[in-house]
Structure formats: C-alpha cells, structure tokens
Length: 268
Image 1 (tube, helix red, strand yellow):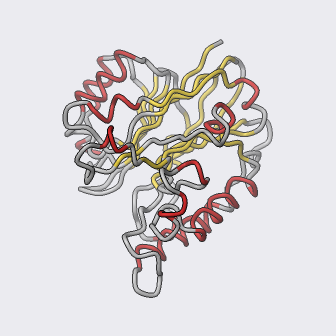
Image 2: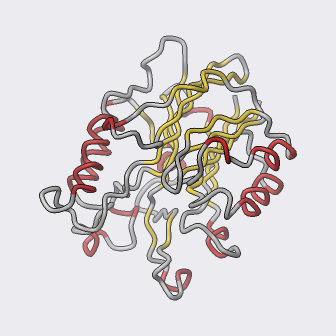
C-alpha cells in the first residue's frame, strides 16, 4: 500500500498558501510537514487545507517566527508532543503518530535553527543555539518505542555531506556546512539508528540540493544549492522506500520559498 510523506520549509504558510494548495492538488502526498510557518496556532489557515481533504492537522506555531505543522489525510494521534529543544520556547518540533498498513509510525517534524552568519559561538549566540539543539537531538532514537516505526523530516539547516553542497571546499567555513555542524548531524543520524532516505535513493557522489539562496540573481543558472531538508527513517522502513522526489521547479514558482518540497514514497 502506497504512502507518501512530504516536507517543505514554506517560509510563511499564509503568504504562500496558494503554493501549498498547488502542491497538494498536484502531487497529493498523504502527509505534508511544513516548517517556518510563522503564524500562531489561532491564525493558522485550516480551512483551505481541510477543503482539499487534509482534515487532520497538528500545529506548533508562534508569531512571526519558526513554527511547524503536519497536515494529513490520515488520522493523526498524540498531537501535543511538542518538545522545547534548548528550553527557549521556540516552536521547532512536533511529532505525531499515525497508522498505515498495520504499521504504527511516529513522525517527527523539525525546524533546526539556522545559526546566523558567523560559525563561532563565542561571538554568535545563534550558532551556539544551533549546536546545542543538535546536541539534544542526539537523544532521539529511531527505535525508541517498541513496535513503532519512525520517520524524521524537516529543515535541519545542515548539508552534512560533501556532495550536499555546490562546493565543499568553499563552504567549509560557511554556516550549514562547517565540520562541527556536519559531524554533529552525522552523530544524530548514526547514534539514533536513523537511515538517510534521500541518500539511500540517490547515493553520493550525485549532488542533491533542496535550497537555493534568495541572494542569487540567477539561482537556476548558478545552481549553487545545498541539501538542508532531510527525510530519515528507522531501518525497518527503508526497504519500503520506492523513490524520493525533490521538486526543484518549485523554486521558480511565483513568490517562492527558498526551499523546495521533498516527497518520500513508500510501498508498505
């Protein structure tokens, strides 16, 4: 039985609701996880999503910043699992439970801090916050609940591998690809027994990008991207992965996010 899960940093869900609706109408994933929704829970745009058949919605938002939302055609459970990483009150995590083909699946939706511009926590508290956030993520294990499979998606704001960036050498001192970040995220992945599904489907050395900067005059021509968005799973789900779509064309849509949707497809 087919299952599809999408992840997308939408960079304001109310501003880009037409793009969300287009994605849902055209690609129709079973579940869509959004990051950087930038809206409080009471102002979240439920109506257009429910009108498209996505009646099950879990949200964790705040005014003007951050925020995650999980939108589903399948019933969702445990909608209040929102962990306050680093204890600063940011809306950066949400997990839900759902069932498909007799499998119980825990789905984590993350928005990891970007980390500012300077990769030095002594002068840039934002970078320190990011490193502390990643350190706390090391406690999350894909097999942490007996009899329950796991999926972790979101904007993790780190491109961990050499071929996850347009130039490994030039970005080694740029936030999102510094060694301390990449090693930290790799430790979260391996220590938590997670499988990187995007790289399972498209192994290195093939380049994979999900983000292209707004600063680029010709983002498509330059193609200086980074893989900041990720889809991981527990090992039992990885054999069921059939494909992963990175919707690069979404970066060229009207008033786009600088991230594009990623959709993982499974046959359960």
